[in-house]
Amino acid sequence: MSTGSKASGVSSFVFGPPRIAGLIGAVVFFWFSLTPTLLPRSWFMQAGISALSVAIGYVIGSLVSWIVRPVRTRSGANPVAGSTRRRIEIGLGAVAVSIVSVGLIL
Image (cartoon, rainbow, N blue to C red; front, side, top):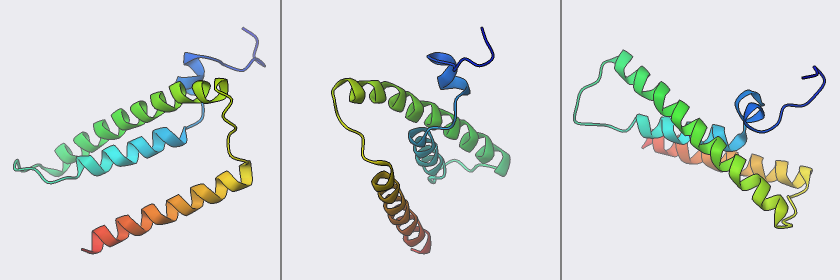
């Protein structure tokens, strides 16, 4: 294997840059890990549950991204242009932060 070759397949999935879908999955699963239960949890138990939930959410989100991306490109769906996509991501991020902030206040 040459040092200049780009990794592909499973190795790029494992060692590649973070995927947006994976990060979204991790955040959603983290939120789910913080839901109240009837069993009292110590702080280290909550930390372990949250860490495990984040890891599972990241893997699920990345797998979805890894499966959907080739299907979209094969079907001829044109991805949104870079600047438009960035604006959409910023807008969705602002909406998500607003919803979470309101939820924390209530």
